[in-house]
Amino acid sequence: MKNQKVTNNIDWISILLYTLLVAMGWMNIYSASLPNVETSIFDISQVSGKQIMFIITTIPLIIVVLAMDAKIYEKGALIFYSLGLLLLAGLFVFGSSHKGQTNWYSFGGFSMQPSEFVKIATSLLLAKFLSDVQINLKNFNHQLIAFGIIFLPVVLIMLQPDAGSAMIFFALILAMYREGLPGWYLATGAIAIALFILALLIQPVALVLFCGIVMLAAYFMTRRVLRNPILYTIIFVGLIAFVFSVDYVFTNVLEDHQKDRINVLFGKDVNLQAEGYNLNQAQIAIGSGGWMGKGYLEGTQTKGGFVPEQHTDYIFTTVGEEWGFAGSVTVIVLIVCLLLRIIYRAERQKSKFSRTYGYCVASILFMHFFLNITMLIRLFPTVGVPLPFFSYGGSSLWAFTLLLFIFIKMDANQVNEW
Image (cartoon, rainbow, N blue to C red; front, side, top):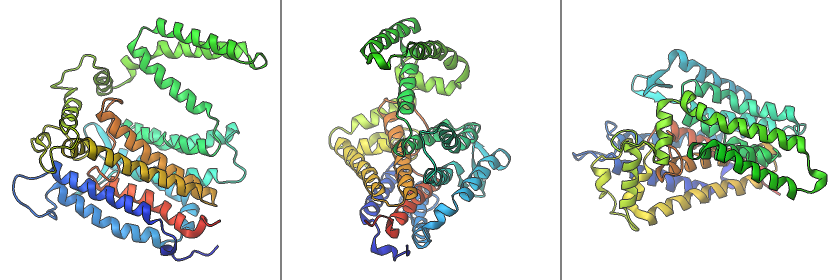
């Protein structure tokens, strides 16, 4: 198939949504970091000035991605992945530490977080593996290899330790599900999360009793030919072991700051001037915006600097305070439209590699959006993940841009013609 001129088939709707999100993100970063003295928006001594420079530098990145042959991303997937693992491993020797995490390379005034770019490399290699005609995700060995591709960088990132970045990689299981991974994997994960939360809120004995009743009901409601008492017994024993292990894991395995974040989520033992401060201030800022917001650059919580890290992980609080419920919904709608657009274009691909990679892109972006926003409205423990295209940072903006535009290039390469 000939690599036709990219502008013939480029998805301008995705590019428009990307541009709107980046522009709105910069406006909120500017508001969240507004200096007390008048200065140029290009002043790189200011956060907003640095971010606009990061935005400008995405232009040559986009041009290079769109100009390259789309086949290079499939052919070079293993090389990209190997380089990513080397960068992660190199952090333990050459990385710089910040707040107890060694997840950055620092070169003078420039810093780079490799885990952001490894998401791209992992997506490419996973897509390449799953696109092999001989691969069937109903096969356990093939499942192990696919999970291995995901978990290898996760292990290196957890050793930094950076649990927030590591969690994002699990979103790739959604792409695997699209390509044939049995649904019980997702169901088991969802049940495990629910049980972990419930075991922290109610007595384990009561929870086990409730689960036993549910399993008995499920057993007798199942058709007789499908009933397997041995299987049900094994599952129930495993469930009991899991429920009674939660307290041990919470007490002895999780770090103190992780336990604090879970306690904050459930309102247990919370000091609003200590571990509960960030989330409390974020909720005050979002709630104070009302329906229509206080107006751009008029947020009192924002201007007063009451929300820590507001231009990074907590950038959505600026949207809530200054743009209100209407502005927040607008941002979420734009995000959802971009995700749906990526999925729509992925489903139109003739190439299984392109389709799988498209689902990887959508899954990673979804997980970032989901974790970042739900932690601010107290539906999920606080984790340090940026809001794509909104949060301040060169590494995250460049990585998200590359992640998206590699797929746009694949899509524009006429692999989607019927």
